[in-house]
Amino acid sequence: MPRPIYATVSRSALAHNLATVRQHLAAVPAAATGAGGPAVAPARIWAVIKANAYGHGIERAMAGFSNADGLAMLDLAEAVRCREAGWVGPILLLEGVFEPADLDIVGRYHLTIAVTADEHLDMIEHARFARPVDVFLKLNSGMNRLGFVPSDYRDAFQRLSGFAQRGKIATIGHMTHFSTADGPDGIAAQLEVFRSVTSGLRGPVSLCNSAASLRFPEVAADWVRPGIALYGSTPFDDRSAESYGLKPAMALRSALIGIQDVPAGGAVGYGATFRAPSPMRIGVVACGYADGYPRHAGTGTPVIVGGVRTRLVGRVSMDMIAVDLTPVPGAHVGTPVTLWGAEGLSVDEVAHAAGTIGYELLCAVAPRVAIRSEA
Ligand SMILES: Cc1ncc(COP(=O)(O)O)c(C=O)c1O
Image (cartoon, rainbow, N blue to C red; front, top):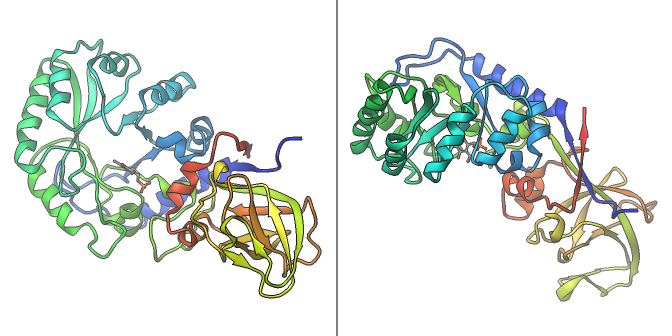
């Protein structure tokens, strides 16, 4: 029998979350965003499936997001996998291409690419495409990660327009990425930069990640790019996914593989960081940092054992954690354990206890953890 740890990914939860984000966007009238003028149709959704669909698996995500308008990712090979698995809608490569040869594949598989740097323009200039390619020109509106700075953006657009006239490019969209959509600064400053730089330019607009889609649905424009919300986790520190009606798509589960009766003063785990204040039953769970459970989760991190909420005690080991069985007197070897994503325990709660974010936990589930697909 394999170790009892496994994850489940629910296709219906993925589909539900996509529909929930769509409804959220539809509930407010769209506002003018700059390029292309006001969006009149409801925003289309690129379901972001980078990082192996935030740990959920590309094929599972494709099935769950079958109603998405497009898929967005980073990896060319994953984009090809999606096409070969039958995805016929648009596929956006969020970081564009990495070398000239990638453009052959872009053309062959009809992929849409972000154009973020002069090197991309040079590569397109020298590429030969069987048919014109769709692109999104990326503006660095203040995050200072990828994209053209405002003073270079229109020159880049002109170059792309020239390529369009030569039949290499079909549509030129405009995109930017918000750095503080989840925080007190919001999106106003970056949106203002975007609007002024793209003013009067034609083409579809894509601005919003999950945080911006949920918090500022009125600026959704033509295409939104939510990732984390579609997996049922929150981009916010101060608002839960559940409060938006989102459902966890992944649950991580295991079982007790050992029980220890620890006397008062007895230590638990590496470094003896936890000592039983009084005699205690401790459960040992088959889940450790080599499974993707965060090593920084400390004593007190919530865990569900046999349907009862309790807490982790001591340090996370490579393959095991220890839990307090005081509230679960009937627990025994084999009792099921939920680490996150079910029975009211969100991945965000566990992430918060570990000083990180749900994104990291979902992406970090290790290859040795079997993933079961659920309807
Ligand atoms: C360009 C871009 N768009 C969209 C997303 C999706 O973000 P989120 O998962 O916060 O919705 C990301 C993720 O980092 C991104 O880099």
